[in-house]
Length: 209
Image (cartoon, rainbow, N blue to C red):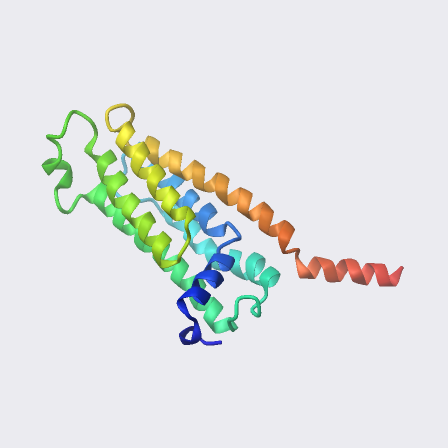
């Protein structure tokens, strides 16, 4: 089935199955954890380590997710499945580029313009609004409902921490939440969809006996 043959409902179901492995949550969480460290260390740009987890998406999908699900369950061929992996990586890279540019480079001088709002760190508000909107956009585009929850957690924690804690705290918080959810989903996915290669090896051993 080509991507053009998907109805909106079919696409939503397939994407939810494709991302039910928790991989996107884990990798995005790792990216945010490294981004929080960049903020903590007051770097002028995101470090290479922050970008590296994005490169793992292809390996994760090809070695863990697709062998367990199979292309038939995803109603796709290898080319379409590969395009989904690229779209996921590119989308995450764009998310990081936008949020890091707004926080570290501040091209629109938002930190100066909003600096008169109370005595808190304006970057908290920027992360809450921009990051929250980007999470919500991802939740709508993919679509994945749990990304709306991530959006709310980031926005709410950033607002609460505006007067209380440094800007990296809500970033670390949402990173930990995403990693925890990702681990839970990955474990559940592994149990629901066993590794076919392992099953085949076990069967071969059983036959030899």
